[in-house]
Length: 358
Image (tube, rainbow, N blue to C red):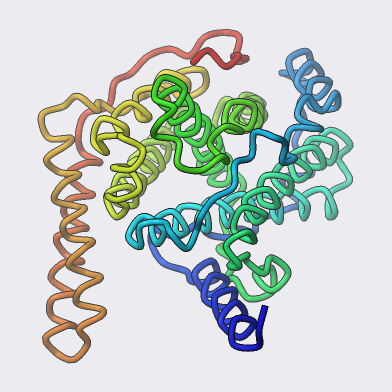
């Protein structure tokens, strides 16, 4: 590799790390919380399920999974369609950042805690998320654009969430991650000609890690009935709406990526929402009505408003500011419209534990 190529590779790494470092409404965030409150959790009400789950995590079923094998095909990054390459890199960087965010949070929970049950859980979870982030970063490294994870730890802004908000957000992140990965895996299993990168072959076992992590947060929520009742149901609805809406907007920003996979974005998102809603019935007393007549049209309006906000930001000046402000107002109105769609209520089952079924 000559000096010019070295310089360009270094610039690419810097640009990719900058992508991961940026904090926006749609980018994965780094979180911090009240670790003392986490330390006071008593898992006695779910002890049997808790011990079974931690025994499963201790057995480390994916210990040897995140390694490149003969199934890892060589990829011609330089020959990849530019639009696809841009969006696929964005997908990988976003996924890597989300996984590493979990690793950092869980590792800090283990480091600062004294509660044996909680420390053991987050030790296993940080281990898994570190593997996921590292594996994605290896895929980026092949293209010369790996994320500097050490720099990311120091440079990324941290958002404080109370523990209950961590439970809601992270539970949904893990379960929707499972639903996303397994839906892509099953689609490519049936349409292998659409598998344009080998990393998708690793999604089946990978998503089972995500499922187990979600199970842990479901059990944590079951330790205190107040977390899923009363006013907290409104918070649950807020996080469900925010997570689903964010996924819709983010996915629609990657049309070339989904076209290459042979996936209709609206079908894919609705399918993921459906799986996530069915799974979340294990602990949440409500699910969103994703078949409501207002659901998809409002998501489309939200997505258009977010695009206009970004255009206004890029344009700059008074005109750009006006466009961005008006788009922000429209986006807020669309979110309120989504949030006010009546939820579907049900009674969660007595036993919270689930096994991957898709």
